[in-house]
Image (cartoon, rainbow, N blue to C red):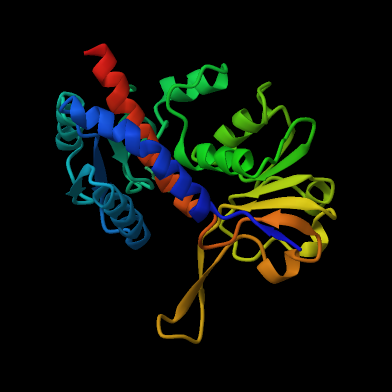
Amino acid sequence: MVQILSGKEVSRKVYSDLIPRIDSLKKQGISPCLAVILIGENPASKIYVRSKTRKFESLGLHSKTIHLEKSIDETELIGNIQSLNNTKDIHGILIQLPLPKQMDELKILQLVSPDKDVDGFHPENVGLLSIGHPRFISCTPKGIMRIFDHYNIDLDGKHVVLLGRSNIVGRPMSLLTGTKKKGANATITVCHSGTKYIPDFTSSADVVISAMGVPEFLKGKMLKKGSVVIDVGINRVEADNEKGYRLVGDADWNSIQENVSAATPVPGGVGPMTIAMLVENTVEAAERNMVNS
Ligand code: GUN
């Protein structure tokens, strides 16, 4: 039987563990608050932002979405970010990616105060993670590590193959899984658009973490017997239903069953963990802010 690694279930545990921390902050007059900057009209980004802010609402936490036009002047955007940096009641700031093409992503992410960077995208936070002293860890990789921990999947000595080297998933994931810490300490291979033949690597992987965005790319025959698949892909494919589409991962769910021992489904796998870690990081930011103020 293939074990389903349910991010939905793990996220419930995260939220219940956060309740006493949130209560304790509220007793001290602090309500963790996230500010989200959404630029432009990317439909997927709008859906992601809505599900993040809804989760905050459902937990009785505050969030504020600042929706800006794609054509916004850079000085105005900088002003918006600086104003959030200086607002005491805002504990976390998230700039939804991708940004419109004309914008310089690095320049903009660097404007967010590293102490409010709950996405862990500021170079200072990426640097701290890379030297083994993380402050804020980006939400999807952190959530995947929490799934491993919850299901007692110990990566020590394992071969982990990452499909994708993005700053959001692949790169931080390689730092987390490869670090010399309990539950990690894996040997890492990163496959990317320059990799000649991906099955050469996935076939010897104990764990495959895919963040490619290619629907149902990963097939059972590319995997070793007993391997674990973590599927970060959320892809829309045409379907003969009311919506006209269905969501599928990077893995072909039916096909991988022949070889995997455990896998995350899409939806209900990694997605809920990304949001849970965003809430956790925002609570952590509020706690840290309290200690430092
Ligand atoms: N776009 C896709 N994933 C993410 C994420 O985790 N954070 C932000 N800010 N943008 C994203």
